[in-house]
Amino acid sequence: KESERTEKEKMSTEKIAVMVDSGCDIAPECIEKYGLWLLPLHIDYPEKAYLDGVDIDPQMVYDRYPKDYPKTSTPSLQEVIDKLGEIADAGFDKVIAVCISSGLSGTWNAVRLASLQQERVEVFAYDTRNISVASGLLGIWASHKVSQGLSFSEICRALEEKTFSSKVMFYMDSLEYLKRGGRIGTVTSMIGQALFPATNRAFTIRSPSSAVSKKANRSCSVKWSSSAKGTGSGSAWDTAQRQRNCRRWQKWL
Image 1 (cartoon, rainbow, N blue to C red):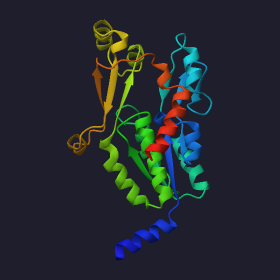
Image 2 (image 1 turned 60 degrees about the horizontal axis):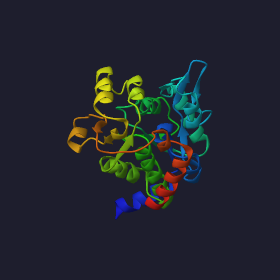
Image 3 (image 1 turned 90 degrees about the horizontal axis):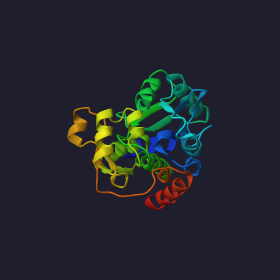
Image 4 (image 1 turned 135 degrees about the vertical axis):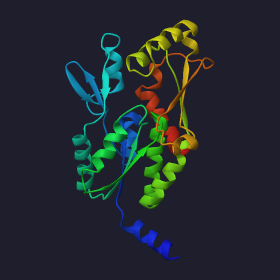
């Protein structure tokens, strides 16, 4: 009873914010609806580095293909510290930072390191071991639990337990972008293009098993399937699809 009373007292005083990186692919209307804080990744072109979801969107990237291929980079430590400062200025004292897999991006590590260089808010840097909407769902779920009144520690524990319950599948017309981004090697790309026609390329990203997690392996495993079919890779990432995902998330919650 004493522990329950202490937990309830914490719930009444905690001001919890949920921050998600832009790799979580949460639609802008969902960011606003669930009161999320966006930490943008960088989309780098020769003329400048854009902030994902701030001054560049997916359609702008598509419009420049195939002439221009951007690179991506993580937010700097100072950018993360500044974002945490904004959250503190808004009256929050705890932050749940939901990040795409540390095996695919350095964002989680940047948040972890930045949190140690400031004292204004307590930060739980959560490595989803996933990417895109599979990570985004966990951010929305966390926000939903905050609104229900769960404590900071309860939500953090629950998120860790949910890490291994999701996976994301995606279809690609070409393996060229995976190769350019360093996700697969040149040889793998050449063999894949030769063996499988474009209509038979699908990938699954799975969270690692709990046994792997105990070994502190935070990478995602990418499974290549030749059975799924689809048409057009761009449609999975455009604005209309994000809006449909937002409606699905509301039902899921």
